[in-house]
Image 1: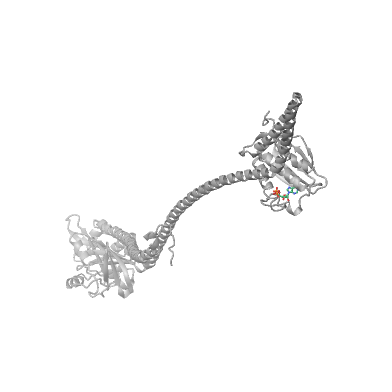
Image 2 (image 1 turned 60 degrees about the horizontal axis):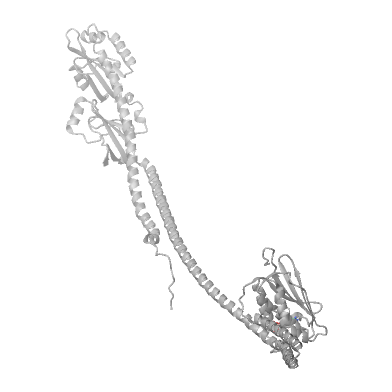
Amino acid sequence: MTHEIDNPYPPRKWLQNNIKSLYIITLVIVLPLWVLASFYVFTNQAQRNLHQIIHNDVLLFADSLESELEKYRSIPKMLMMDVALTNSVSSPNLFNSNHIHNYLQHIRATTNSDEVFLLDIQGHTLASTNIDNEGINYAHTPFFQDASDGNSGGFFTMGVNAGIRGYYFSESLINSSSGTVIGVIVIKVNMARLERDWLNKLTPMMIADENQIVIASSTASWLFTSRQRLTNDQKRRIKLTRKYPTTSFPILPIEVIRNIEGAEIVKLPKLGYERVLETSHFLPDLGWTLYAHGDLKQLDLPIRRNTGLSALLVMLTLSLAYLATQRRLQFNETLVRREINQTRLQQAKNLLETRVEERTQELQASNLELKQTQQELIHSAKLATLGQLATSVTHEINQPLTAILTSADNAEQWLGRGQVEKAQDKLAQIKTLAQKMGLITSHLKTFGRKTDDKNDWICPQIALDNAFALLHTRINQEQVETVVEDLSSFQVLANDVRLEQVFINLISNALDAMQLSQYKRLTVYCETDAKAVDIHFSDTGSGIDNDHLLQLFDPFFSTKDVGVGLGLGLTISYSIIKTMGGHLSGRNSATGAVFSIRLRAASKSDRIL
Ligand code: ADP
């Protein structure tokens, strides 16, 4: 047979049972997604930051390059009206080569340029700071053609002789009287001077010309490579202008991986760059494009670190949320259980209280029953005492009855003889004897009546007199000397009939105990203090066996023969005295036994006058 366990608590909710699995599932699903998302976000952010940095660098470089070029561009503009130069070109006969040469050297030195030279209208070099270049014809060059047309010229080329990259700035020299172009002044600046140290910065850069040929680069091997294959037209123009000594350039292999906002991610396989962020800036005046590069590989570590940290953070957050939810659920469950327990406790308490009340009522009922039984027992015991007294009472009544009969006979005879006076005497004797009999029966009547257990302040002397009156015959017959202290000055809390019953019992026991004594004396004396009166009954009887002292008041304890003693007298007396708020005790004395009744003594206010 199986017993179902009584579980008073409500079934746990779904969340309570599955919180751990939920946490693990969330972790397994959310964490990889989070890692992917954060990797994506961090990569984008890092690329954007890198783009911003290299873009700023390229803009700064462009600014610096343009301002540098602008500075040199203004120099031939200032010189185009120079009289010494125009005179030198317009009057070649007066031309003093030494003088003009020194003058050009002076310009070169003060402008910090690399070469300054003077061309006639056919493009021949009339004078140059570099004497080796005198006589060279530049008629084919764009910078000459632009200037001879009256425009400002600017041209990048790689020197045919020296193989140095240079930028040529040119302006026409104008005859002030005719206003016609008579020659060209040219300033050449070494490209390396323009680049300064920009190309050695952390951000790798390159400059590509209008043909996408790399003319400057922070990576030396990229120089004079081509970012794209040259068209025939481009090649023809390069050839025509002798811009570069060759028209074939190695291709710089660039693979565009993908475009991002304002930049491209490219692969430069030859150089071992797998992923490079490339941003560009076009310089419209020059037709050049500046390219800056950022190595994306260097971003890998911070991206991974940030992704890892964010994953850790999410894991922590999820774990904290899990723990907090679990604690919250546990707390709620504890609260619910506590409430249920409290309700159960309250119910148990109520049940207990009801049971206690029921038991109390039952006890009160049985107490009442017990009390009634006790009352009846006391009454029965009293009737038994009356039975025991019957013989001596009969004897007591017989005596005056016989005397009455005799006196009645005598009175009759005296009346027959006419002696009325003597007959009257006899009648008076009869009256006294009848009164005596009445007294005896009235004692019996008082003692025998059914009484309640109500206590009053009474004088114990009355009960004591009644008790002695009822036992008078036996005391006389057994020749017992009685010494009784006067108790009439005391008032005690007692029920008079019950007290008399106890007195009769104690006197009877004393008489029983003295039956075999040679010298029989019963002494009643009392002791008193402010609160109580002790009434002692001391006899000269057998005394009490030491072994019996503790059993004296036990029901049915008797040392008397069967049929003589019931063993209830002291038990009942004890309980009677107790209902009066007093105490009954027994002990041995030097002569026999002493039984003492302690009763509450009346204070002045209690006394009934
Ligand atoms: P019973 O008189 O029927 O035996 P009691 O309860 O009155 O019952 O007395 C119980 C016993 O106490 C007596 O049998 C007796 O042994 C002892 N006892 C009582 N009073 C005295 C006394 N005055 N002297 C000696 N023994 C006594």
